[in-house]
Image (cartoon, one colour):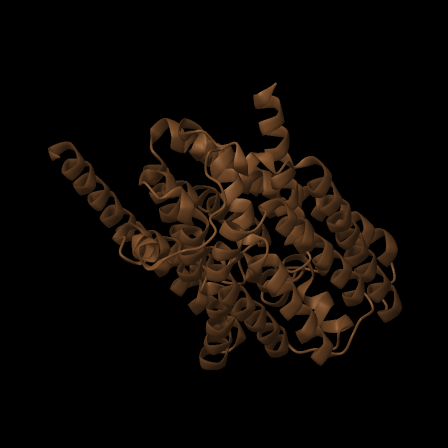
Length: 420
Protein backbone atom coordinates (compact mmCIF):
# COMPACT_ATOMS: atom_id res chain seq x y z
CA UNK A 1 0.00 0.00 0.00
CA UNK A 2 2.87 2.37 0.82
CA UNK A 3 4.39 1.62 -2.59
CA UNK A 4 1.01 2.26 -4.24
CA UNK A 5 0.78 5.69 -2.59
CA UNK A 6 4.38 6.40 -3.53
CA UNK A 7 3.80 5.48 -7.18
CA UNK A 8 0.57 7.48 -7.36
CA UNK A 9 2.29 10.60 -6.03
CA UNK A 10 5.12 10.03 -8.50
CA UNK A 11 2.52 9.76 -11.28
CA UNK A 12 1.07 13.15 -10.29
CA UNK A 13 4.54 14.72 -10.31
CA UNK A 14 5.10 13.31 -13.82
CA UNK A 15 1.70 14.68 -14.88
CA UNK A 16 2.62 18.10 -13.49
CA UNK A 17 6.01 18.12 -15.24
CA UNK A 18 4.40 17.03 -18.51
CA UNK A 19 1.65 19.65 -18.47
CA UNK A 20 3.53 22.78 -17.37
CA UNK A 21 6.03 23.18 -20.25
CA UNK A 22 4.26 22.41 -23.59
CA UNK A 23 2.50 25.79 -23.75
CA UNK A 24 5.79 27.58 -23.08
CA UNK A 25 7.37 25.77 -26.03
CA UNK A 26 4.45 26.01 -28.43
CA UNK A 27 6.98 26.89 -31.14
CA UNK A 28 8.00 23.23 -31.48
CA UNK A 29 4.80 22.43 -33.39
CA UNK A 30 3.44 25.86 -34.30
CA UNK A 31 6.35 28.22 -34.91
CA UNK A 32 5.20 29.57 -38.28
CA UNK A 33 1.61 29.81 -37.02
CA UNK A 34 2.75 31.81 -33.99
CA UNK A 35 4.69 34.20 -36.22
CA UNK A 36 1.59 34.76 -38.32
CA UNK A 37 -1.04 34.99 -35.56
CA UNK A 38 0.99 37.20 -33.22
CA UNK A 39 2.45 39.18 -36.15
CA UNK A 40 6.06 38.86 -34.99
CA UNK A 41 9.35 38.07 -36.76
CA UNK A 42 11.62 35.03 -36.19
CA UNK A 43 14.12 37.36 -34.48
CA UNK A 44 11.42 38.63 -32.10
CA UNK A 45 10.38 35.04 -31.35
CA UNK A 46 13.99 34.13 -30.55
CA UNK A 47 14.18 37.22 -28.33
CA UNK A 48 11.07 36.09 -26.46
CA UNK A 49 12.66 32.71 -25.83
CA UNK A 50 15.95 34.31 -24.81
CA UNK A 51 14.04 36.32 -22.19
CA UNK A 52 12.25 33.15 -21.10
CA UNK A 53 15.67 31.52 -20.81
CA UNK A 54 17.04 34.39 -18.70
CA UNK A 55 14.04 34.05 -16.37
CA UNK A 56 14.74 30.32 -16.16
CA UNK A 57 18.44 30.75 -15.41
CA UNK A 58 17.82 33.37 -12.73
CA UNK A 59 15.31 31.04 -11.10
CA UNK A 60 17.16 27.72 -11.05
CA UNK A 61 19.53 28.29 -8.13
CA UNK A 62 17.07 30.08 -5.80
CA UNK A 63 14.50 27.42 -6.70
CA UNK A 64 16.73 25.00 -4.79
CA UNK A 65 16.69 27.27 -1.73
CA UNK A 66 12.92 27.58 -2.05
CA UNK A 67 12.49 23.78 -2.29
CA UNK A 68 14.55 23.31 0.89
CA UNK A 69 12.63 26.00 2.79
CA UNK A 70 8.98 25.56 1.76
CA UNK A 71 6.54 22.78 0.86
CA UNK A 72 7.40 21.37 -2.55
CA UNK A 73 3.77 20.36 -3.05
CA UNK A 74 2.46 23.88 -2.48
CA UNK A 75 5.14 25.36 -4.73
CA UNK A 76 4.13 22.99 -7.54
CA UNK A 77 0.44 23.88 -7.07
CA UNK A 78 1.21 27.60 -7.27
CA UNK A 79 3.35 27.11 -10.39
CA UNK A 80 0.69 25.23 -12.34
CA UNK A 81 -2.09 27.59 -11.25
CA UNK A 82 -0.26 30.76 -12.31
CA UNK A 83 1.00 29.28 -15.60
CA UNK A 84 -2.50 28.06 -16.46
CA UNK A 85 -4.13 31.41 -15.75
CA UNK A 86 -1.41 33.23 -17.69
CA UNK A 87 -2.05 30.86 -20.60
CA UNK A 88 -5.63 32.12 -20.81
CA UNK A 89 -4.20 35.65 -21.05
CA UNK A 90 -1.83 34.48 -23.80
CA UNK A 91 -4.80 33.12 -25.76
CA UNK A 92 -6.17 36.66 -26.14
CA UNK A 93 -3.42 37.32 -28.78
CA UNK A 94 -1.69 40.16 -26.92
CA UNK A 95 0.87 42.55 -28.41
CA UNK A 96 4.59 41.77 -28.53
CA UNK A 97 5.44 43.73 -25.30
CA UNK A 98 2.68 41.89 -23.40
CA UNK A 99 4.00 38.59 -24.77
CA UNK A 100 7.34 39.44 -23.20
CA UNK A 101 5.63 39.98 -19.83
CA UNK A 102 3.74 36.68 -20.13
CA UNK A 103 6.90 34.73 -20.93
CA UNK A 104 8.72 36.34 -17.98
CA UNK A 105 5.87 35.22 -15.69
CA UNK A 106 6.09 31.73 -17.17
CA UNK A 107 9.86 31.76 -16.70
CA UNK A 108 9.44 32.57 -12.99
CA UNK A 109 6.68 30.10 -12.17
CA UNK A 110 7.89 27.22 -14.37
CA UNK A 111 11.34 27.21 -12.75
CA UNK A 112 11.71 29.31 -9.58
CA UNK A 113 8.72 27.77 -7.82
CA UNK A 114 8.59 24.45 -9.71
CA UNK A 115 11.88 23.06 -10.94
CA UNK A 116 13.84 21.99 -7.87
CA UNK A 117 10.61 21.19 -6.02
CA UNK A 118 9.55 18.47 -8.43
CA UNK A 119 13.07 17.02 -8.81
CA UNK A 120 13.55 16.96 -5.03
CA UNK A 121 10.28 15.07 -4.53
CA UNK A 122 11.29 12.49 -7.14
CA UNK A 123 14.71 12.05 -5.50
CA UNK A 124 13.03 11.51 -2.11
CA UNK A 125 10.37 9.14 -3.42
CA UNK A 126 12.80 6.94 -5.37
CA UNK A 127 14.81 4.23 -3.62
CA UNK A 128 18.53 4.06 -4.38
CA UNK A 129 18.18 1.16 -6.80
CA UNK A 130 15.25 2.85 -8.56
CA UNK A 131 16.82 6.23 -9.31
CA UNK A 132 17.74 5.51 -12.92
CA UNK A 133 14.26 4.31 -13.84
CA UNK A 134 12.49 6.98 -11.76
CA UNK A 135 14.34 9.83 -13.45
CA UNK A 136 13.96 8.05 -16.79
CA UNK A 137 10.22 7.61 -16.18
CA UNK A 138 10.01 11.24 -15.01
CA UNK A 139 11.32 12.49 -18.34
CA UNK A 140 9.76 9.72 -20.43
CA UNK A 141 6.44 9.99 -18.62
CA UNK A 142 6.56 13.75 -18.96
CA UNK A 143 7.18 13.15 -22.65
CA UNK A 144 4.20 10.77 -22.81
CA UNK A 145 1.99 13.45 -21.27
CA UNK A 146 3.38 16.02 -23.72
CA UNK A 147 2.88 13.67 -26.68
CA UNK A 148 -0.74 12.91 -25.71
CA UNK A 149 -1.44 16.63 -25.24
CA UNK A 150 0.31 17.44 -28.54
CA UNK A 151 -1.84 14.85 -30.32
CA UNK A 152 -4.99 16.36 -28.82
CA UNK A 153 -3.71 19.84 -29.72
CA UNK A 154 -3.08 18.79 -33.32
CA UNK A 155 -6.61 17.38 -33.54
CA UNK A 156 -8.06 20.63 -32.16
CA UNK A 157 -5.89 22.72 -34.47
CA UNK A 158 -6.65 20.77 -37.66
CA UNK A 159 -10.38 20.50 -36.84
CA UNK A 160 -10.82 24.24 -36.27
CA UNK A 161 -8.52 25.14 -39.17
CA UNK A 162 -10.41 22.98 -41.63
CA UNK A 163 -9.61 23.23 -45.33
CA UNK A 164 -9.42 27.03 -45.44
CA UNK A 165 -6.30 28.28 -43.68
CA UNK A 166 -7.29 31.96 -43.53
CA UNK A 167 -6.23 34.39 -40.79
CA UNK A 168 -9.35 34.04 -38.65
CA UNK A 169 -9.37 30.23 -38.81
CA UNK A 170 -5.67 30.02 -38.02
CA UNK A 171 -6.07 32.35 -35.04
CA UNK A 172 -9.06 30.43 -33.69
CA UNK A 173 -7.21 27.11 -34.15
CA UNK A 174 -4.17 28.32 -32.21
CA UNK A 175 -6.40 29.78 -29.48
CA UNK A 176 -8.12 26.41 -29.12
CA UNK A 177 -4.74 24.74 -28.59
CA UNK A 178 -3.69 27.35 -25.99
CA UNK A 179 -6.98 27.04 -24.05
CA UNK A 180 -6.59 23.25 -23.93
CA UNK A 181 -3.06 23.43 -22.52
CA UNK A 182 -4.12 26.07 -19.97
CA UNK A 183 -7.09 24.02 -18.77
CA UNK A 184 -4.93 20.92 -18.27
CA UNK A 185 -2.50 22.92 -16.11
CA UNK A 186 -5.32 24.28 -13.95
CA UNK A 187 -6.82 20.81 -13.39
CA UNK A 188 -3.40 19.32 -12.61
CA UNK A 189 -2.66 22.07 -10.07
CA UNK A 190 -5.61 20.98 -7.93
CA UNK A 191 -4.76 17.29 -8.28
CA UNK A 192 -1.32 18.11 -6.84
CA UNK A 193 -2.88 20.18 -4.05
CA UNK A 194 -5.29 17.47 -2.92
CA UNK A 195 -3.42 14.22 -3.54
CA UNK A 196 0.32 14.82 -3.02
CA UNK A 197 0.92 14.54 0.70
CA UNK A 198 3.18 16.75 2.78
CA UNK A 199 4.34 13.62 4.58
CA UNK A 200 6.26 12.58 1.46
CA UNK A 201 8.91 15.09 2.49
CA UNK A 202 8.65 14.56 6.25
CA UNK A 203 8.57 10.77 6.41
CA UNK A 204 11.61 10.49 4.19
CA UNK A 205 13.69 11.57 7.18
CA UNK A 206 14.97 14.47 5.10
CA UNK A 207 13.00 17.37 6.54
CA UNK A 208 13.03 20.82 5.00
CA UNK A 209 15.91 22.86 6.37
CA UNK A 210 15.38 26.11 8.21
CA UNK A 211 18.58 27.97 7.53
CA UNK A 212 21.70 27.29 5.49
CA UNK A 213 25.05 28.28 6.89
CA UNK A 214 28.42 28.71 5.16
CA UNK A 215 29.70 25.19 5.78
CA UNK A 216 26.61 23.80 4.03
CA UNK A 217 27.14 26.10 1.08
CA UNK A 218 30.71 24.83 0.88
CA UNK A 219 29.35 21.29 0.51
CA UNK A 220 27.89 22.44 -2.79
CA UNK A 221 30.43 24.87 -4.18
CA UNK A 222 33.39 22.79 -3.03
CA UNK A 223 32.13 19.58 -4.61
CA UNK A 224 33.82 19.13 -7.99
CA UNK A 225 31.29 16.44 -8.96
CA UNK A 226 28.48 18.99 -8.63
CA UNK A 227 30.34 21.30 -11.02
CA UNK A 228 31.11 18.52 -13.53
CA UNK A 229 27.52 17.26 -13.48
CA UNK A 230 26.39 20.83 -14.15
CA UNK A 231 28.72 20.98 -17.18
CA UNK A 232 27.56 17.58 -18.46
CA UNK A 233 23.96 18.75 -18.34
CA UNK A 234 24.98 22.06 -19.97
CA UNK A 235 26.50 20.29 -22.99
CA UNK A 236 23.73 17.70 -23.23
CA UNK A 237 21.02 20.32 -22.85
CA UNK A 238 22.61 22.53 -25.51
CA UNK A 239 22.31 19.57 -27.88
CA UNK A 240 18.70 18.88 -26.87
CA UNK A 241 17.74 22.50 -27.65
CA UNK A 242 17.81 21.58 -31.34
CA UNK A 243 14.37 20.00 -30.93
CA UNK A 244 12.85 23.49 -30.86
CA UNK A 245 14.21 24.31 -34.33
CA UNK A 246 13.53 21.09 -36.20
CA UNK A 247 9.90 21.90 -37.01
CA UNK A 248 10.78 25.35 -38.35
CA UNK A 249 13.61 23.80 -40.39
CA UNK A 250 11.25 21.30 -42.01
CA UNK A 251 8.76 24.03 -42.89
CA UNK A 252 11.10 26.75 -44.13
CA UNK A 253 13.94 24.74 -45.68
CA UNK A 254 12.34 21.46 -46.75
CA UNK A 255 9.08 23.24 -47.66
CA UNK A 256 6.72 20.87 -45.84
CA UNK A 257 3.31 22.37 -44.99
CA UNK A 258 2.35 23.17 -41.39
CA UNK A 259 0.06 20.15 -40.99
CA UNK A 260 2.77 17.70 -42.13
CA UNK A 261 5.34 19.42 -39.91
CA UNK A 262 2.91 19.14 -37.00
CA UNK A 263 2.53 15.42 -37.66
CA UNK A 264 6.31 14.85 -37.79
CA UNK A 265 6.98 16.86 -34.61
CA UNK A 266 4.16 15.05 -32.78
CA UNK A 267 5.75 11.71 -33.78
CA UNK A 268 9.06 13.12 -32.53
CA UNK A 269 7.41 13.99 -29.19
CA UNK A 270 6.13 10.42 -28.97
CA UNK A 271 9.77 9.34 -28.93
CA UNK A 272 10.15 10.95 -25.52
CA UNK A 273 8.36 8.26 -23.50
CA UNK A 274 10.20 5.55 -25.44
CA UNK A 275 13.60 7.23 -25.12
CA UNK A 276 13.23 8.41 -21.54
CA UNK A 277 11.72 5.28 -20.01
CA UNK A 278 13.81 2.79 -22.02
CA UNK A 279 16.93 4.83 -21.29
CA UNK A 280 16.18 4.80 -17.58
CA UNK A 281 15.72 1.02 -17.41
CA UNK A 282 18.76 0.38 -19.62
CA UNK A 283 20.75 2.77 -17.43
CA UNK A 284 19.88 0.79 -14.28
CA UNK A 285 20.79 -2.48 -16.02
CA UNK A 286 23.91 -1.56 -18.01
CA UNK A 287 25.12 1.66 -16.40
CA UNK A 288 23.65 5.15 -16.63
CA UNK A 289 26.77 6.83 -17.97
CA UNK A 290 27.30 4.21 -20.70
CA UNK A 291 23.78 4.56 -22.09
CA UNK A 292 24.05 8.36 -21.84
CA UNK A 293 27.30 8.35 -23.82
CA UNK A 294 25.69 6.14 -26.50
CA UNK A 295 22.65 8.40 -26.83
CA UNK A 296 24.78 11.57 -27.02
CA UNK A 297 26.97 9.95 -29.66
CA UNK A 298 24.09 8.92 -31.91
CA UNK A 299 22.33 12.28 -31.45
CA UNK A 300 25.51 14.07 -32.58
CA UNK A 301 25.87 11.79 -35.62
CA UNK A 302 22.23 12.28 -36.68
CA UNK A 303 22.50 16.08 -36.31
CA UNK A 304 25.60 16.11 -38.53
CA UNK A 305 23.79 13.99 -41.13
CA UNK A 306 20.80 16.36 -41.04
CA UNK A 307 23.08 19.36 -41.56
CA UNK A 308 24.94 17.70 -44.46
CA UNK A 309 21.93 16.29 -46.30
CA UNK A 310 21.06 18.35 -49.43
CA UNK A 311 17.65 20.03 -49.12
CA UNK A 312 16.74 18.51 -52.52
CA UNK A 313 16.85 15.01 -50.98
CA UNK A 314 13.54 13.14 -50.58
CA UNK A 315 11.55 14.59 -47.61
CA UNK A 316 11.29 11.15 -45.99
CA UNK A 317 15.02 11.30 -45.16
CA UNK A 318 14.51 14.49 -43.15
CA UNK A 319 11.41 13.14 -41.44
CA UNK A 320 13.21 9.97 -40.33
CA UNK A 321 16.27 11.90 -39.13
CA UNK A 322 14.10 14.29 -37.10
CA UNK A 323 12.34 11.38 -35.39
CA UNK A 324 15.67 9.61 -34.68
CA UNK A 325 17.19 12.81 -33.30
CA UNK A 326 14.13 13.14 -31.07
CA UNK A 327 14.55 9.57 -29.80
CA UNK A 328 18.21 10.15 -28.88
CA UNK A 329 17.55 13.60 -27.39
CA UNK A 330 14.84 12.26 -25.13
CA UNK A 331 17.02 9.34 -24.04
CA UNK A 332 19.66 11.90 -23.04
CA UNK A 333 17.12 14.03 -21.17
CA UNK A 334 15.83 10.98 -19.34
CA UNK A 335 19.27 10.03 -18.06
CA UNK A 336 21.45 13.01 -17.20
CA UNK A 337 19.73 13.74 -13.87
CA UNK A 338 20.12 10.11 -12.81
CA UNK A 339 23.87 10.81 -12.48
CA UNK A 340 22.95 12.74 -9.32
CA UNK A 341 22.63 9.36 -7.62
CA UNK A 342 26.25 8.46 -8.48
CA UNK A 343 27.61 10.51 -5.56
CA UNK A 344 26.39 11.48 -2.10
CA UNK A 345 24.68 14.82 -1.51
CA UNK A 346 23.71 16.02 1.98
CA UNK A 347 19.88 15.70 2.09
CA UNK A 348 19.65 19.07 3.84
CA UNK A 349 21.07 20.84 0.77
CA UNK A 350 19.63 18.52 -1.87
CA UNK A 351 17.27 21.14 -3.26
CA UNK A 352 20.00 23.79 -3.32
CA UNK A 353 22.40 21.36 -5.02
CA UNK A 354 19.80 20.62 -7.69
CA UNK A 355 19.28 24.37 -8.10
CA UNK A 356 23.00 25.06 -8.52
CA UNK A 357 23.49 22.20 -11.01
CA UNK A 358 20.45 23.49 -12.91
CA UNK A 359 21.87 27.02 -12.94
CA UNK A 360 24.92 25.73 -14.83
CA UNK A 361 23.18 23.04 -16.85
CA UNK A 362 20.28 25.07 -18.17
CA UNK A 363 22.16 28.16 -19.33
CA UNK A 364 21.31 27.04 -22.91
CA UNK A 365 17.72 28.12 -22.20
CA UNK A 366 18.78 31.64 -23.11
CA UNK A 367 22.10 30.96 -24.86
CA UNK A 368 20.66 28.66 -27.54
CA UNK A 369 18.18 31.19 -29.03
CA UNK A 370 20.91 33.85 -29.03
CA UNK A 371 23.36 31.51 -30.75
CA UNK A 372 20.73 30.45 -33.25
CA UNK A 373 20.14 34.12 -34.11
CA UNK A 374 23.89 34.65 -34.56
CA UNK A 375 24.25 31.65 -36.86
CA UNK A 376 21.32 32.91 -38.95
CA UNK A 377 22.89 36.39 -39.20
CA UNK A 378 26.34 35.02 -40.09
CA UNK A 379 25.41 32.27 -42.56
CA UNK A 380 21.87 33.06 -43.73
CA UNK A 381 18.67 31.17 -42.93
CA UNK A 382 19.53 27.81 -44.52
CA UNK A 383 23.27 27.58 -43.83
CA UNK A 384 22.72 29.18 -40.42
CA UNK A 385 20.48 26.34 -39.28
CA UNK A 386 22.98 23.78 -40.57
CA UNK A 387 25.82 25.54 -38.71
CA UNK A 388 23.71 25.53 -35.55
CA UNK A 389 23.08 21.79 -35.88
CA UNK A 390 26.84 21.20 -36.33
CA UNK A 391 27.58 23.30 -33.25
CA UNK A 392 25.02 21.34 -31.20
CA UNK A 393 26.61 18.05 -32.30
CA UNK A 394 30.00 19.30 -31.04
CA UNK A 395 28.51 20.10 -27.61
CA UNK A 396 27.24 16.53 -27.47
CA UNK A 397 30.76 15.22 -28.11
CA UNK A 398 32.17 17.49 -25.38
CA UNK A 399 29.47 16.14 -23.05
CA UNK A 400 30.71 12.59 -23.72
CA UNK A 401 34.25 13.58 -22.74
CA UNK A 402 32.97 15.20 -19.53
CA UNK A 403 31.12 12.00 -18.59
CA UNK A 404 34.44 10.11 -18.72
CA UNK A 405 35.98 12.74 -16.44
CA UNK A 406 32.98 12.44 -14.10
CA UNK A 407 33.36 8.65 -13.89
CA UNK A 408 37.08 8.97 -13.18
CA UNK A 409 36.41 11.29 -10.22
CA UNK A 410 33.69 8.91 -8.95
CA UNK A 411 36.22 6.05 -8.94
CA UNK A 412 38.81 8.20 -7.16
CA UNK A 413 36.26 9.08 -4.47
CA UNK A 414 35.34 5.42 -4.00
CA UNK A 415 39.03 4.54 -3.55
CA UNK A 416 39.44 7.29 -0.95
CA UNK A 417 36.42 6.05 1.00
CA UNK A 418 37.71 2.45 0.94
CA UNK A 419 41.18 3.51 2.07
CA UNK A 420 39.67 5.24 5.11
